[in-house]
Image (cartoon, rainbow, N blue to C red; front, side, top):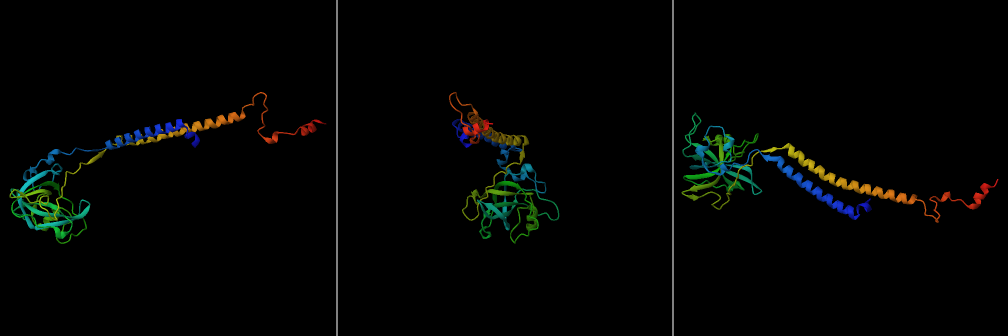
Length: 292
């Protein structure tokens, strides 16, 4: 059958079938890409810096529309309220986030026996490879700019080491610091002291900037497009199957033609050779059979 498949016309047919299958595969990839689409596009308004005190209120629920919003606030850091959050990646390396409490100027205060005179917010200031690399926060009044993110959930059944926290969890941090806090945290992008940027992005050192961008929106699956992508894969295989079937039919036709040539009668004037040697008999044997 390989001899039949190597005929020029079937080689050309095979190339054509491969080309058609490739087109079908590309269509399948296109349909598959359309099968997963974001529920809503990234909101460009989140990149417009808004005052923290006008975006989120302490003691209230963190709304999903506030996530990823770039905010600014003025206040001071407390070097005694700083923890490390382990297991954080930065350029493929595992290290620690440095999270420091930031007292927000002008923030509303909470009422209650456990409420503090000031309202704070955790700020993820940067990343370090080793705990000893974490430097103290800048002192004085700081103009903070960063991305507002919801509080993380603390790791269950995990005891944090001294000076560490299992996650950037407001519920966990307010127990460490004993302060009133916003229901989220800020990943710092800029820290100005007297108009000078003192953030890790501007000051060389072991503390590296986080550079956290907006989180991708949730994805939803379009099952119809997913079905179409599988359908195009079937069509690609069917194109190769048709080529193989045509080659097989041609092969069988060649076999039938060769058998017909063997069974065809010999031309006039030529004695047809017997197909089986045992059918040929000697003349003397024939005469003996005729005599009584």
